Image 1: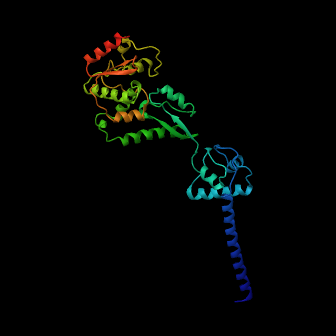
Image 2 (image 1 turned 90 degrees about the vertical axis):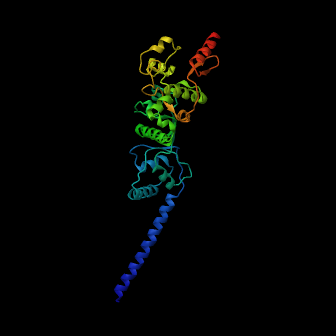
Image 3 (image 1 turned 30 degrees about the vertical axis):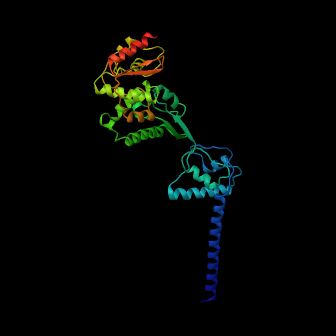
Length: 322
């Protein structure tokens, strides 16, 4: 081996060692940068659609350096190449004393700032529309039978379609969970939602709903008209329930498909949104022998009877005291 070849090998070896040391130091430097604590300007931070990562860092972190921005850009490119991950837009909670890697990992996920939307059982569509308008610029009125009233947590800036899918999935999973209940042998899901809505508008509390649910089952089994006042209110007000007087006997004769004093069986659709708790009560399939009830304003409760004769007697005694 001649001298020139020895010198060449020496320089190649020296270069290789230097290059390896450089790579090691470079990765240590990146590790240091990514794990360095940062100070957030405000919390939560906001990333708008289309914001460049450089502006995201400058707008939300105190004293961020060019080298830190460069490292984050490189790291995000690697992450995107390997896992096809992009940073999201929206609001994010990021605590002080977090590191840059913590910051990146948070914005690579959907917004962690959650909003709470409560759909109240027994609400009308107008009431839900008013609530939805607080969270969504564009939304559609949701039919009563499509969702279950409950409290839902959503990411800020979630679009309406994603929210609606969340509600639909909740309802689907709820009825899957209860698919072995004996009520499914008598009623389909839409009918159960209808019965639930009647309980929402008629029942005063959980116990009251249990009793009324059994009355509904008993009357349906005997092919009796349900004669539920809430369906008359729905018919008269077109589902708005903006009624400022008591029902009259003449109201009970209104010819409307939802009026259960006129038409046999269940109304064609629910008359309000139905809550999960009410559906749970419904699936208990409470049994009693009651067929009639009326509301006693003096006692602020429903009075139940097993026969029309008993019902008339109790009603007469109540009216006599008025």
